[in-house]
Image 1: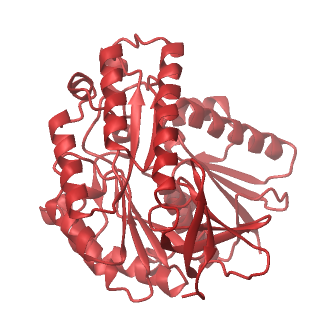
Image 2: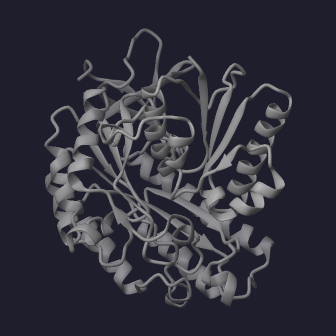
Length: 434
């Protein structure tokens, strides 16, 4: 049996693509490894990211290491798929010819034929998980129609394409049958789901169907675009107990001048009104957002307005990035990158310093509360858990002393929060596993 190593870089959407590929390879008789340092895999597939500079550099360095291993005879065949090869396939073929073939983000399934794997439609919903077996990502659509000024995703992944609801439901049932208890619903914009297939936004209906899968405990929603946010999604989040009181909604900025320059298609007033509606309907909602600073034309006044927004909104989770020019995007073609790099980094640091204060205050308010957590792992002297307010890999953790007890990964426990730091909570169990 030939071993194949699938190395995945980039976002959770790439993770899902790799897991679908790995299931097909396993069905074809390969022994499939993932992100492995083992040197006995003679076939290597690298699923790349091409979104921002650092991610592109990481992908190129990984390809170069694998190409060197092939030259040394340690690898027989080397394939590259994903976003980087979608954008730069011609350049990569010239610069790194050791790669047997490059397949893009929209044509990555070509590697299935290149490796002799099955095209059997029955495998369309099969996955070989690379996450811990109790949680998984469910990618409900591909591509994006919004065309924000700074974003290369539509250039890489193309226009929005929804996965049929029946196929998603089958995939979710297969995941649940394999032990998945928490499902992260992801897409470039989850709220756009269904428009291309059904002529209407169908995210709420999909969420209700997922809630009917008995063994799923938590369903979590990521990457919701704020413009035209469906009211029925708010209603289903408020009414369905399986849907985590958690929403990842990237606002990027709040200054009307910056929102217009970014082609975000909503205003400050509309963003504030959406937040008010969400928090009125779901009082304990944990809001996660992403912000972008240093976009062309961002004045100090725009940035101060953004700080005021963060200060007033008190997001539970927040990430901030400095703008970097991406070729082919509107901002790269039409705008001058006029904010100095040192100013961009200062603004990143100022936002995060403010968010650290907010996060600590939010956490201190949770001390004394009893919350339900799922155990993800054990690290040293602590079991690592999460509440419904935290997504794996990106959010904070709840640490439970391991001495004198045995907690099981993937099981749910009620715990009492005993103390807080800015990005961690500490807790003690109050009952047995559920």
